[in-house]
Length: 119
Image (cartoon, rainbow, N blue to C red; front, top):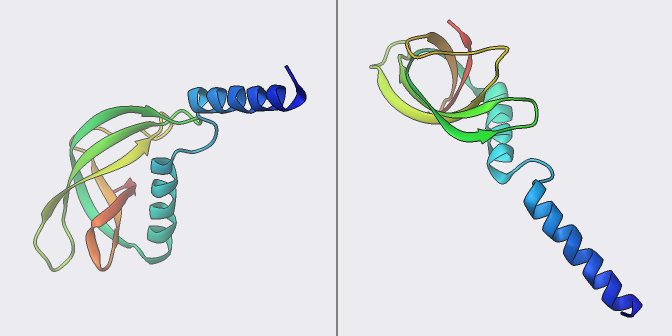
């Protein structure tokens, strides 16, 4: 096997390991991070209630579990509405069905939101 063949084999091996191990954040995790950054700067604190938490089966390196979360959002001066979003929940700050929470909501997109803390 020549030098070029060995380099090609090494590159293919590295690619296979990377695809199996999943080095770095996934595209979905990056989208969640970008959503959090956006909501941190422009989101409006709004009361909500957790109606349902469904684990997706995804976890991240710090130990969080991703959930699809059904919320009833109750903005001031407007009617309540229900929305489903996804978010990682961590053992250090667990949430349960029925919990009252504060969500950050994008002003122009009421279905773009994240749980920001307890109410």
